[in-house]
Image (cartoon, rainbow, N blue to C red):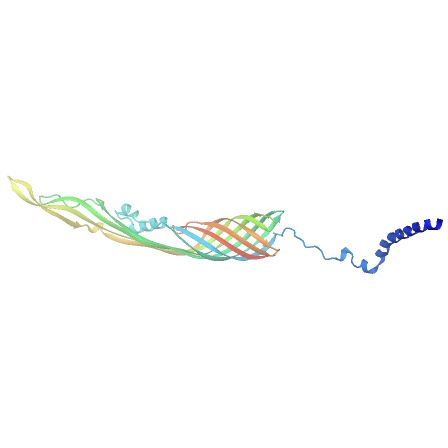
Length: 314
């Protein structure tokens, strides 16, 4: 009876000993040792992209250019009139104003970024092919009284009234920016795969202007003509005969002035945009810039560009 009571206990002890021995056996088993975690492939990394380094790319977009040629027209008109008596009256008759043009444009860029944590500073050079041109033309005229003094003397048969000067002014101007280069300093802030940025810099544009202004003026004198009769020895105007005109050779002339020139003009650039990185190397961009050019031959130009681009970063 005692042996029967001990047998179940021995069975339980054997099962427990087998369970405790199993880990040790598994550690020595060669197949299990070959499947340890250090030999598994590393998990993919989803860290922030590296914004530092060189990059380059191309862009396409929309450009709008405005040319203000008012000063150019005043200069040319003043030259056309010279020292003529009618200069002050005629100079303001017709002036060029502002003209604008818009079109699609293409370009390319290259730059370098340095990362200071999430702050990104960089420099960039960009070329834009614009070929944008405006054209203005027109004329105007007016008649002025007594710009010249009368020369007809009062007499028994005539009475001077006034001088009349007709002045006409007209011209045209064509202004063009072929292309431009910008050198910009950029500052941005990394937000993962996106980087909004602002920039400021210098620009140089290749420009041309072709303008001309002309003036013509003619002066006449009005006087009344009368039949006269002697009444008791005195001259009396008895019959009104109408109006006559006498031309003034010194008050009639025409002249013109031209300006044809091409060259390079500097400007200043302000802009902003956003870059996006796909992976570590593929760059996409949307950007807006405004360029204020210095005066060239009396013409001031402002260019607005809105573009998208794509490129590679290293």
